[in-house]
Length: 392
Ligand code: DWN
Image (tube, rainbow, N blue to C red; front, side, top):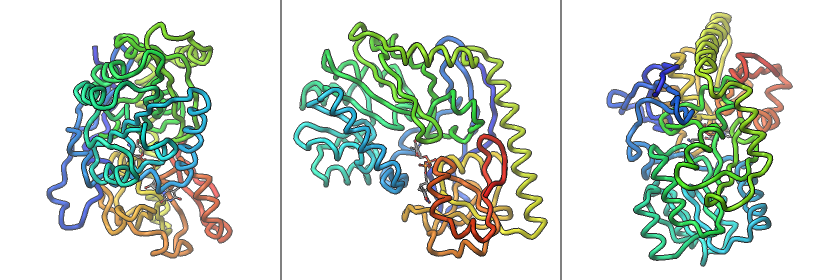
């Protein structure tokens, strides 16, 4: 049974950065969140058609965040050392920072966003411009055979039909093959109050507990879990064919940690919903108080996460003047729903602002280091994770 615990109101597509002339046609949907009593999976209630989100205009480019390029290079090196894979498939390859570490002859990409599929194709990797399904897996097996390693980062939680997704993986994975995927961790989201990981692109938020249930029912098993710091806390899941390998201590540790936290109790989600409502009240009050004191506030990082915060809290450009982002395709547009202008960092003088809201709070240290001059001149940062606060 699906039990609803959180209503975040009407939302736009989190990454649909918009031109001024298009405001009146903006697509909105109800962002509500529920918990499945049977599998323990947390999902949004109303799914948005994937074609509306992942198409040739998709703007999120992994390669625009330098720490992520390093993350994928290190991950690829570690997987090569550990599993020595020959045939490698990446699902949701974006601009290619992971796959570029593997040889072109034996590696394949799947990417539904045409703009990014073109990038990996031009790099020399065979790329299927398609969504990951059992039909596509069947086609790949016929053309290129079975895979030693299937990798996906911040992609599996984007797919609505998880049974089909895991079946497709099982059908194409060699008997000793490994399926490795990483996505934001539900436990870290609940601990840190980072409700902004919930938006159209994340129809599911994964706990190890729910994944263990879902993978098992599709003939796969988790044998290892790495807890990562990226994206505010993610889990890297290692899975293989059922009965393929001994289950490691990291799996038991994570299942136990989640159980102790209360992942299996609906009350945990009701408490989280109260925390989210309080976070909204505090953030809106803080911004309004600062504005009435005549302070100037900007934001760094036009993230999908900040789309959730701004729309849920009703934060528009009466509270935040401008957002800067390093992504060229986001610059010159406005933020989805709340229509705050987005510009390049070079286009503003940060010293004109008193406060910077961290839309990309997951890159807090990188941003604080880059903006040393702002801090030295008395500038302060605002975040809502883990609590609404001001710091310098
Ligand atoms: O799964 C997803 C993850 C991986 O990325 C997607 N569903 C969508 C997206 O989520 P996000 O937009 O919340 O991701 P990030 O990685 O937090 O986005 C950071 C944004 O901030 C990028 O647009 C780049 C920008 N940025 C910046 O302007 N200055 C980043 C850094 C480090 C900076 O210094």
